[in-house]
Amino acid sequence: MTDALPVIPLAAPLAGTLPAVLFSRLLEDSLDAVVIIDEHCRICYINGAMQSLSGYASGELLGQTLNGLLPDAVAAQHDRMVIDYIRSSRTSSVLGKIREFAIRHRNAQMIPIEMKAMDLGMVDGVRYFGAFLLDVRARRELAEKNASLLAQLEQQALHDALTSLPNRRAYEAQAEQAMARAARSGGPLAVGVADLDHFKKINDRYGHAVGDAVLRTVAQVLRDTARITDLAARLGGEEFGLLFPDATLAQAHGVAERIRAAIANTPTLLPDGTPLQVTMSIGVAALPPGVTLDAAMSEADKALYAAKHQGRNQVASAG
Image (cartoon, rainbow, N blue to C red; front, side):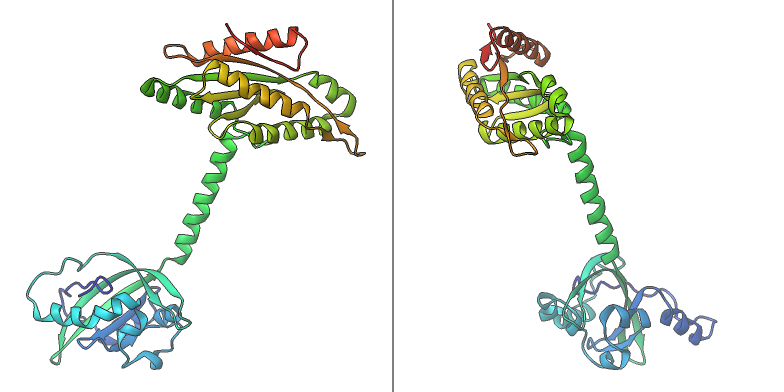
């Protein structure tokens, strides 16, 4: 028997001491789809749920082989596998197990199902097999929606809503990973703290909507200008964190200078179309092995203060 139709032996006569018609009614009204085939894989019975699942009326399938409902790769082997199972005295490895599978709908769509099948034994010299099938499309759709929702929640938890940049939590997590990689490889690592110059004046003069637009412009420049391996995150307000993997302090200073120049040359358009120029000051510091992230960020923050003190719109390195 193939994986398409795992079977289990029926331990007791179907009817027992109750009228067989009761069992027939139970199968017919079952929420699970039911199909019974004979030893030649011809369909002998389908219930109402199976008709709905397959798109076929009962009379259309009775006497037809099961292969028409199976995936092509399985249908090519199914009859032979059924015959081999019947002739063999070996215990099947798939009997009694719930399997995920697919059947072909009348419109050719493959329907994912969960299936458990049984060896119904001999009746009047003919061997029969039956299977219960459960449509799992709704369950899969729900799982996909839940996975999508979880991904959205993770995105929201690790990204700043306004700029879509990673937030402080994400920055610290990725910095720790970069520190571990640098410790293993012996490569350099540097960090930076960037702050927009006179941002409060922008908010006071033009309003927070313009301030938000400026932050989004700056975020895009950071994404476009930093190296692909670098990380730019919004730490809060107008402050941004920079991470420079595999970069010496001098190399990080060079990237930061490129970012500073790009910010100065990328205006944000006011509602009336007037370009608003902003500038950024940046402090960078090395993050060598044995130094904590907090300590390196503190050094970068001191360098940022020096850049502000020296006139703003410039990059300063710690040390």
